[in-house]
Image 1 (cartoon, helix red, strand yellow):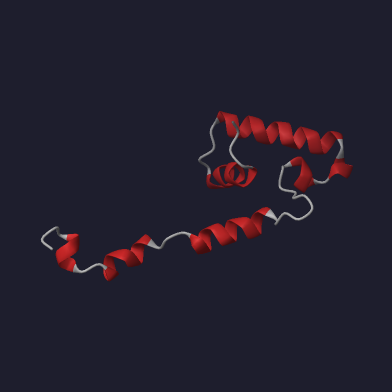
Image 2 (cartoon, helix red, strand yellow):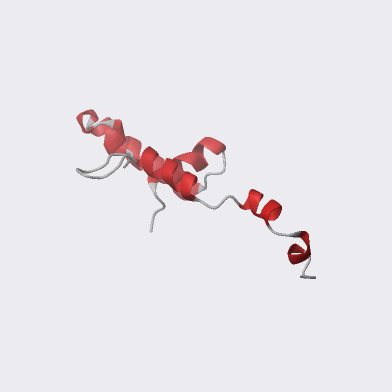
Length: 85
């Protein structure tokens, strides 16, 4: 199964993409170049259907709702963190 398009594109942008990611991008760009009317978002699988949120809103919500583990250590009493509770 292929990873979601935004994840693949982020790996490519960060320089951590593997051969499968590069092949996916090559194929998606081929789709766009062979039919530009489809639009780049559709070619890259970044489009959304009726009633669905755009990928960037979904990503923003996921990040917002993810637990902030950096603040957990400050909220847990030191004795509990050290196992001497």
